[in-house]
Length: 105
Ligand code: FES
Image 1 (cartoon, protein in one colour):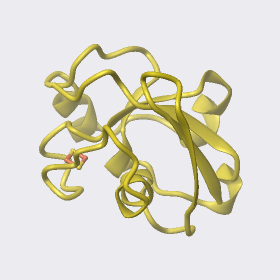
Image 2 (cartoon, helix red, strand yellow):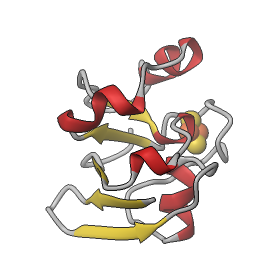
Image 3 (cartoon, helix red, strand yellow):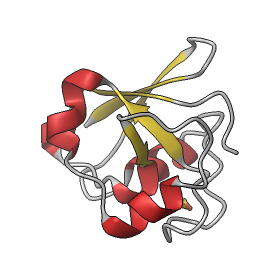
Image 4 (cartoon, protein in one colour):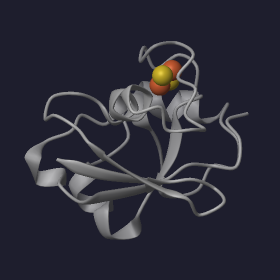
């Protein structure tokens, strides 16, 4: 699926991802600025925080329990906040748009 990450300043990064990888991996592999992912996807750092475009909330699903707890440590959490390492990409998510927060903590 193609994913668009939008930086805090509005700069878009469209990346080609593969189904089965996480949203965080898609960002890191394509060097999208602002996604730090310090823990490497273990849901233990909250530095892979993104905002899911409202139109995509249903398709990206619900936060997990661990994710919910880790989000307490993230900066400026909104209703559409997710930890990108906890979102697994599928072909259904082709066109997904997410925003990167101003900072990760
Ligand atoms: Fe650490 Fe997602 S990469 S919580």
